[in-house]
Image 1 (tube, rainbow, N blue to C red):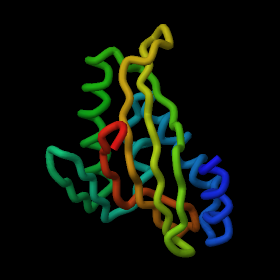
Image 2 (cartoon, rainbow, N blue to C red):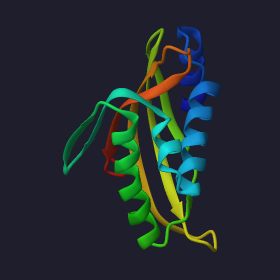
Image 3 (cartoon, one colour):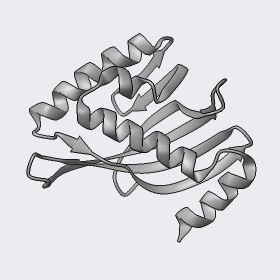
Length: 143
């Protein structure tokens, strides 16, 4: 299982699989709750978000939260009310930096999957010792 092997490498380098899983689970919970400030707390600044539409640079948690306010509105307009992370891959890049691939299925109120997003994150250990997202890249499923 690639996740397990990658998790062992991540643990040996400092950021543990449990820390990554915990961060992404909290991000999923905050997204499901429609809590933009909670979603923003998964990030450290400065941060970058990249997609086919362009790149956004953030210098404050408030800027990230404002972006997530719009994202929550879009999710709700599509009927998506919850999500949870499906971690596909983790690699330690150094003691305090890791790369993660994750899929985010979006579920409606009945629990039916409506959509799936794929993301690639670069995490960096924050001053408090916990990993946070510094770079978020939206990926095409299957790419």
